[in-house]
Length: 193
Length: 193
Image (tube, rainbow over all chains, first blue to last red; front, side, top):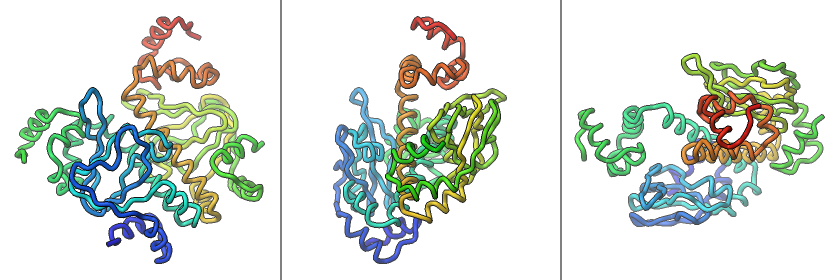
């Protein structure tokens, strides 16, 4: 049950079995139905989510229009980290795009883990480092790469994930209208699913 | 000599005198003349810099044109953290905008500090958290706020720093031409210095 989680954690730091057991004891299990929300706009993000099964979608809203920002899948962590760290209300919503099984770590329990042992401080540091690198690289991509290139990279990076996300959300992630994405796909000889 | 540094470190974590002394023993002191570089484009960033005196300017280059990205001042840390963490070549250059005194921490010495005690892991985690929050908030500002608003916020945030930065660099940081900044300032009744 915890295979994906322990593999993920060990990709950052070496953990003893006891340390892993302690960490797992802090987690809560939660199942979500498709379209259920784990974080609402205006709420402080009090939890980080490890996705054991399913997809989570991040979106923001402006003038009653939804903007899909990201999609996270199995074996990935999700949260609004800025809200989680600053304790300020979230500007984004996190919703299940498929039925999900999540392991949930609450803010206070994470602080307890940090106090408990150095290995968790190291996990926290290393995870923050990779989240930071990822956000900088993603921002650079948006500023420097064409929609076409970003679309191709999205497909190539994870073709299977891609097939699980409705095209309207993919278009939104690329910052274009669904019709423009269909045009782009026709140009590239890809048939709409 | 280490007042600004210890104050900065203690803003993240409580340190004992011994812990501070140990950390300081890892640092190297370096003085820079105006326009000297501490990081060149294409080099891996192997050091983080604590500015004890002076200003550092970050810039990138494209088609032989310079783009000023940020300016850092006394009592702040500077580095290309993405290059530092990934060990990949830097796309930016860091140069002294005034004569500078820096405390320098090398990549390997930082890893030694992390191994040495939990308190340094916590420092690393907390610094990464604030660097992450800052980069997300800055990106959101660029995407959502007008040049005028960003200019006003830059002035208000630190009016004294503002007077030490040539207008052409401020214009570049705002992503506009110097003439547009002059126009903006006239509109706001500010005289060019």
